[in-house]
Image (tube, rainbow, N blue to C red):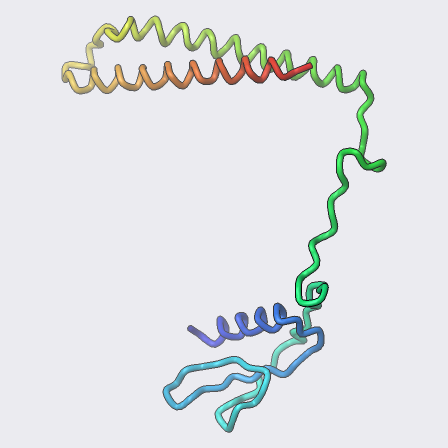
Length: 163
């Protein structure tokens, strides 16, 4: 690891350990050349690092455990934004219209795919002299039909959930 990476890791460790005040950080190198960042000088092979103020406020603690973050306001709280019923009905109507358009488009696409698939025996094209190309197209059509059927079912389920 390079010195910069070690410094960043050391700063992160100090911040996570709950150090609320600025501390001197030393880079110590042992006889075998291993580098260590520490907040205490461990011998003559430790050099103080000149860093900007590494002071990062420690996370709030309760005893030995971190406090959970403050709860987000729930939907039932008094300051949660409300939408009047007329506005919500208009939004639901827009959503229903969009989903109906998507359902109609997907249904047409499914009908075209089924027509082209021709019950598993689509007509061969002129560019499909190789039988493997034909089989690949049949498999692709089959996958497209399955995906389109799933889309139609999902759109129907979504429409059923609108009030």
